[in-house]
Length: 279
Image 1 (cartoon, helix red, strand yellow):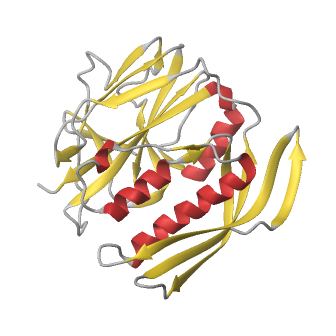
Image 2 (cartoon, rainbow, N blue to C red; image 1 turned 90 degrees about the vertical axis):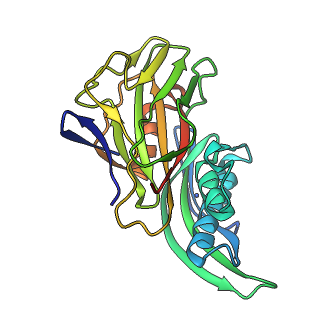
Image 3 (cartoon, rainbow, N blue to C red; image 1 turned 180 degrees about the horizontal axis):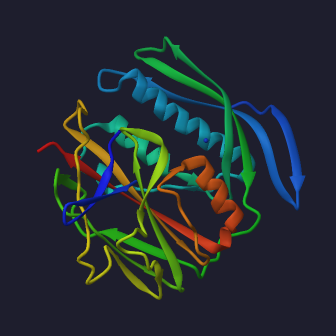
């Protein structure tokens, strides 16, 4: 597993959703939650492996499931990391992963099935799933906004320093998580706050690492034994009105459940992607 490290004088801190059949539904406090069946497809060609095509198809199936319950309001996250990338399928996967439908989230997935179709001229991966989709019980607060950016170009070599700047319109608790899909697609890893940088309550602008904090640095680290020459990593930045305690390793579906319980009007999220190239 690839990990992100904070370095401090030799010490290291470990960082890091279409069928229309409704199976079950219930309404609690006017919040809709349903099991739905959905599918996604993606072609396999000379530049796209079976695994890559099926992963993209799975993300499409998730989005199609979400749309059935909460509508078509798809938020597309254009990742700067894909600007100069020649691997179209991997960038499609990551952009699809970070696209989401405003108003709800997937609580659980079951009965996932994979089928390779003999389409013309290429083969096609078909993924079908049953997804339990829940609506958020409230709308976002339009006056609660978050902006965040990398201070470096999105393509970096191993061993380079990396940092984030951002701004919020209201006093917020800032949480930064790392997502490393080439080694662990299912979990987020905590980056900030951490034991060297504990105060994550900000009034307006913020820097990570915090300004004048010389106790640690965020450094890129190419994963050991990874066969390709570049790997993709992502920062997930959450601004919340209430304090959000995070485990060092957090399952993504469980994290989305926690955000739902926190209340949709109480948080905003940004995703930043970057590439680490083999030195």
